[in-house]
Image 1: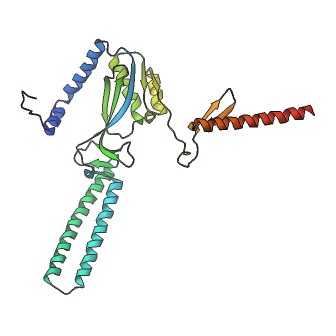
Image 2: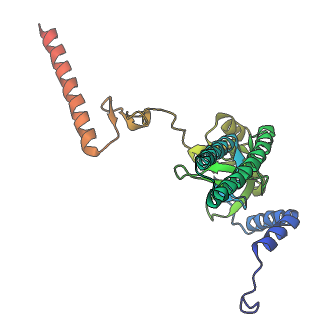
Amino acid sequence: MWLLGRLAPDHKTIADFRKDNGAAIKKVCARFVELCRQMGLLAKASVAIDGSKFKAVNNRDKNFTTAKVEKRRRQLEESVARYLSQLDSADLHEPSESVELKKTYLKEKLEKLKSEMAKLAAIERQVLASPEQQISLTDPDCRSMATSGRGSGVVGYNVQTAVDTEHHLIVAHEVTNVGNDTAHLANTAKAAKAALHVDELEAVADRGYFDGEEILACDRAGITVTLPKRMTSGAKSEGRFGKQDFVYLADEMSIVVRLARGLSTIMRMRRKARSCTAIGRLRAAAAR
């Protein structure tokens, strides 16, 4: 930085460099993985797979879905109704210079809204013609995606990455515009397996990747996948215990809820007490 006088390329220069040298950058990444493999840094055939959301240059206001179009239309219609109401109110007043200026201003606003309605109609036709019912005006390839934050989202890309579990080096990656990770497990794992030049591979992922067909595809490709099953029970949302909250104790032949230790102990004691009472009754009946 000192030699360059803190001269740094702007974002457009970097973007153009990536666009013009995409093939070369891919070769550099592949060569880096090959170098790490030759140095013995990727000796363990085990990877962790996850996806990350990267924001695109496309503003959220420049991304449209059917829901966004409908919401924007309602906003425009409400604005038109408000301006028309103000015009009707102005017509009730005595003619004056201020009233005429206000009416001129309102009419200009209405003309502008009419133009925006026409643009929105054109955008709606593009959205309906799109296979995904979604378009982005600045960056056509990016998509609106939900993030981990509640009610939040990002217009961007979902980058799938396979990382070596020993040295945390990126083995394989792929940029997608699909918001969820469900359909990317097999492709990412196969790419990692090919990059490592191994016959068998172990892969770990989170429950967002859980899909029967993807797991089967990995198994057929010689990839052993470890990931938790999705929690599909609606019990939690209804305020009840879910299946994952219960555990079976084989030695006591009892089922307890995995809550605080004290509550679990009380439940076990109550179950044992009921069992002892039942056994006592059976013995008494047999003695008779």
